[in-house]
Length: 377
Image (tube, rainbow, N blue to C red; front, side, top):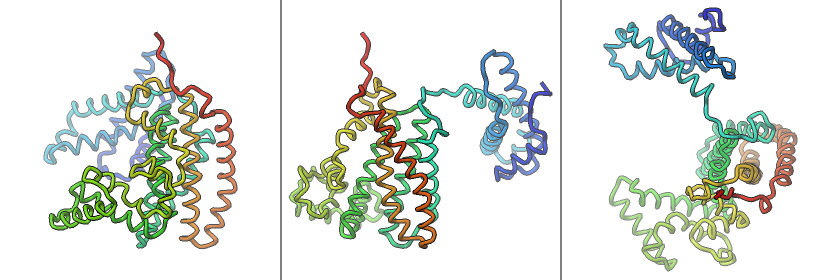
């Protein structure tokens, strides 16, 4: 067992130090635990004749460090030294870490997946998302309008990364239902941008209304004043008391330009926000995503291939719209030289993303393939 692959003490300490957590003089103890964990892992691998991946020593060490910090953190300070010297603590820590590595890494449950993180439909979009999020994460301003756009873009692109992670792991319907939230976010953002400052200001006001409705304003006097404003505005629009929640959530839509030209406008998402954003064509797609998100029986019998393709297609379409907004935002906040570099990135990677999108659109038609598996009698 001693001859099987493992890190020497020097390399082990380099990994521990790279974690940026102080372990004082615990290296000797932790290295003993590491060796015991590696012994345990190899014993199991040899005892059970199945295919295992090569041991990832970095991940093993991360389990040890995090388990150790958790257990020490749960121990009274005066007992820490005694606990460290206990054989029971050593054995328990070694056993838990070996179990977690084997179960979570080697025997980790994986749903059937149609794609991996290295495949261009994922890796190219992920590259693009990482670039955008790195910039947005370091670009807060004092302008509340730009900051709202930035915050909504950050959330949208974070959800996009979440969707990629879900489809990599074979969770297509979960990715599809997450796209539903992404779509809501993009529709609100597009509506605000298309309708300008007056709509933005109304949206900020309704954020405050929502805080009051949820009891998030500490002052009772201020809360009462907000509710008085809400009731007065509702009266102006001919709304009743039962309409308060939807007015608080969607009332900013009254500031949409040419509101009277929107067909069947209502204070909701599909007939209101989606309609105002000009994305009514997604109404049926949004409906399917809602059924999945609300755990209807259809969730149990959803067809993996269909939702895999449609999740990527809808994610890409949302990304293309959001990227155009980001591009305008980026151009207005960086020097021309940096924006020209961004345009070079777009020429290479956005072109590839459009090519990928066309392939998926051709191979996964929305109306041809059955969406749900029928239960066999």
